Length: 208
Image (cartoon, rainbow, N blue to C red; front, side, top):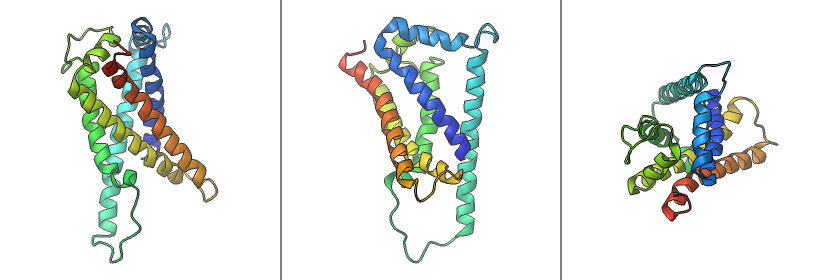
C-alpha cells in the first residue's frame, strides 16, 4: 500500500506541475499536451510512453485499493469487537481516509470521461486542444464542485498517507517525526493549492 501510494504521489506532483502550464496560455498548454503524446520519441512510438504511464498508474491504483481492502479485513478479523476504552481521537485526515479513497476513485472515472475521452465533457470536446477543454469544464458550476471537492480529498489523503508510508517503509522514527509531518502537510497544501488554482482561475477569468 505504501509503495503504490508513493507511485501515485509522484504522479500527482508531475501532474500538478503540468496543470500549472495553463497559466502561460493556450499555446504552451496545448504544446505540453502534445508532448505527452509524443514523449519518448523517436525511441518509442506515438502514445506508447503515455500508455506505459497510464498502465503503471492503473496498476498502482488497483494495488492501493486491494491493499486497503485487505488491511481493513485484517483489522476487523484481528479485533471483531470494539475497544472498551476509546483511543485518543485520530486526526480528521486519518478518519476520512476510506471515504476519501472512494471519492477519489469516483473522481478518476469522471475525470477520464471528461478530459480524456470527452464522453461527459460539457462543451465541444476537441482532441489535441486541452486548454479549451479545461476552460469548458471549469466554466460549469458542477465541474468546479466535483474537482475542488476531489482535490480537497487528495490533500487529506496525501497528508495522512505520506506519513503512514514513511512509517511502513522504515523511514520514520521519533527524531524524524516532526520533519515528516511537516513535509506531509506541505505536500498536501502545495498539491491542493496547485490543483484548485486552475478552476479558480477559470472562474475568475484569469484563464479564459
